[in-house]
Image 1 (cartoon, rainbow, N blue to C red):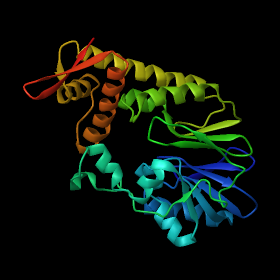
Image 2: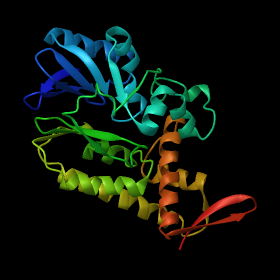
Image 3: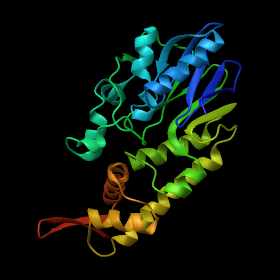
Length: 292
């Protein structure tokens, strides 16, 4: 863990729970792609950079989930580097309370205000800034989160952030976090057609070909959707839909899983309703979902 791996002439990643990309702009200056999940991750990353004799010029954030921006503040304070983001992701990174608030749907209780969901605030510079390394291509990867982006470095390495999960992760947890299901599927279809010398997903092994894994993720979305439709053959409220999914997939409920999986299931319900596969009705002041 926290070992440096080279995947291109100038591109690397640091192996950790959410892989951190490293782009070497020249002999001494480097840019990170994400920063890990907390201050401790930031310290470990800085140690690696120091051992290589590299200076951190900036951090390119793929999106604002806490496990990708948790090292931002420490590294920014230590090096004065700029942190680049854009759109809603920039707003969440500058105001990290938004993540647990969004997931919970209100002010989050203490059980949700911890480093896994609530990173420390960091100052953001937009991708359009002149200091952004323009040789790096920004690839929109919406779906998992609001304005998530990936990056292609000049040596043709593509960092894919959280747009797909490994087979092992999907088989274990079944329901991966998704904000917008339609956009997520569209992104995965785009990823299937991408060509690169190497792909580096945050939560799957680096690989030269990502097509099969992308399709596996698409198939899992279809499986979850069909399961929800089956549950909703009779009018069912959200809490019972969530309960049934947890039991059927052998998942264990806690506060974190309640908001992460719960938010995702709500996104599935919205997508299925908008696509005409579910309808809603109110009975006894309870919102019920029913398959068409």
